[in-house]
Image (cartoon, rainbow, N blue to C red):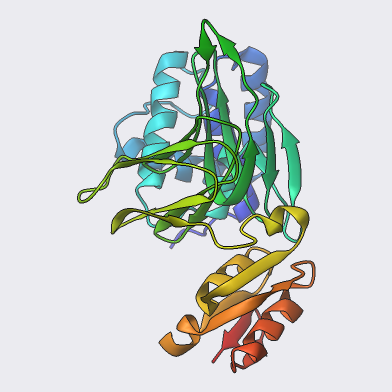
Length: 310
């Protein structure tokens, strides 16, 4: 059985493939690629493994170390690779890293100003991809949660729209300040100021669109698009705290997971459904998890790489 290349080599290989589809990929970049490819056997294995993903879709005919046969062809291959990986129920860390323009390291938020003047707060462990253009502005939340303060940008008589995408869900700003959270099987949009239009591209039942005002939130998942009022402290995380008001322990554990290197495992449905309230400091995430667990009558057991809650 062939050996699996290290994750670092896979990450670098995916970056090279993405770069080969860019408009500025030239002879100098190809020379850099050739040097990287030949520097280590693991680099070559990683590149060929990712290239084979292209081949499964019949999009890439590139021979090893030959110049690309055209930017349009390479770009089509990059899109096909993205579609292939995007159809999987998980996104590997190296792929998220390769696609992200901005990432927040584990344990702290990151403040970003985009080229159009919009400001973003990325929560710990979150990742964001940015696509800004003259006719529209879209960012894709690859993982985690982000708070957006949207800058108005003149475009004729109006303003270029600003949208946040998570899969087939779009949250388009009609005002200024809102947050988007990517959960397992669900996207949550929370409006803090003005209005946001939420569109669910793959909802089969119920409403597919909603316009939210201040204090409104929308949950978009397999059950469709549902709206509700925002719980207190929904944006406390952007100021370095996490606030919960009679929310299921599973929700609290999921938010703290973004700050923890260990995997949190809830061992029973009862543990998942226990309601918790309080404000905790995610800078000490394991202590915060233990505090909330004790308040809910639960116990946390520490194992290598795991935090078991029962």
